[in-house]
Length: 528
Image 1 (cartoon, rainbow, N blue to C red):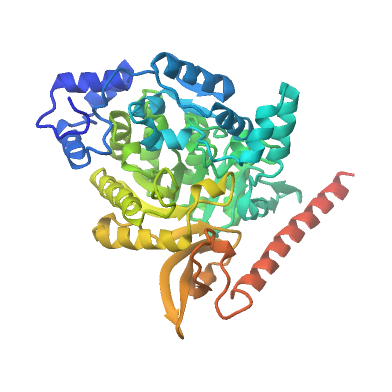
Image 2 (cartoon, helix red, strand yellow; image 1 turned 180 degrees about the vertical axis):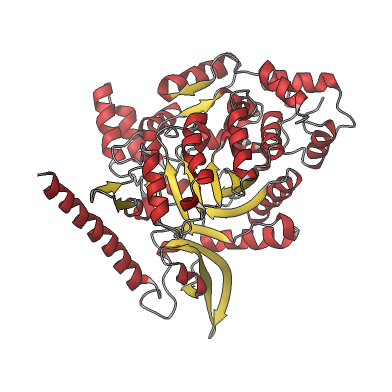
């Protein structure tokens, strides 16, 4: 069967070959069959509509069969060895290993088997999890290459790590705290509360990922930096929530929120259901890429109790949302991912996608070094339609945050705006992103609404969709049009020295810092 041609029917033998190609376990296959998670009509329609993205009928045997994960330099070299045994050479190993030493590497067997190794350089999952040449500065790679010993290489790596930016947007200011009933300061070391309606929880059980995205926005977490966010005490979270009635949503994230255990999730969830002081909590979100990277977790028997917990939330009027991160249709057009999505929805869980716009993965340049507007837009149009076919809400498209190797993944905002405009007008209203292009900064999540002309001058039109002060969301503001800038935060205000919110933002940041510093000093003197 040609993997990219339309098919007339799907026979049971086709499904068996599909399961073998993706090395699905007998447990996963039984779940799929018992719960009707892969109806042939759906697979046929998805494949025939988007054969160029489909991974349902990839040719050849699965290359990765034994280990479930490949981690670090050792795991990367094992993958290279396996590929080499099959006459596949990806090259540029020094560049890739330098990246891995700085940022880490992790890939699941499942995501490795979604890659079309006959055309790997153009496969979005390959670009997503494998470090690529051009990510790391050439001069830094050269220093790493000429180092003669492990100790010398370590010095190069450590020096470069000091130049990276693991916490953009002043995230450390987002750590919540309160004074407990005994008058003691309690800092929630694994939480963030930046926007009034939502509180983030980076739980101690969710500190790793299933695979590492090369553009990771939280490499302080996956790298294990000293200043990583780790929430240990669940009771702290509930006490904080009781003191902050403006919070309606909690988001369990990481790392990957999909790693949370049943027992740990139950600790968070039961008080939300049972405690009348927590009636203001209306939504529990889990941020995870398990759908892409480890769908078999969602298809396992061990995951069924978690589905039961989420269903219990729904039965008590609390929305349960699985927040995925999907940038291309190829990432989910495979049997495990589709089955995982359908299993979540079968139990009443709402599935949404916050979709990062990344050069080389979901955005493309042409041979002249210019952003290919049409090709890039078509990727997103196809994705929007596939999400609709699978019943996934297209929450947002957002720009690369200025962390890691930002230069490699980003593109000029002017071009991204053109792509978004084409995507928005091409999709039906129910399949469109629910927000405009978004980028995060310390001030909040800023949407780029498009362009306008004021007194003959072209400008970007901006508006917050989340902010440190939610009243800022009522105001549309303008920045000078710029053909090259790739970061909203660096755009220059139009016809003004500063944006309307800047003075208040500085005051808010100063107050946050001073208030915590004051309480910490009081706590220190109390301890003495």
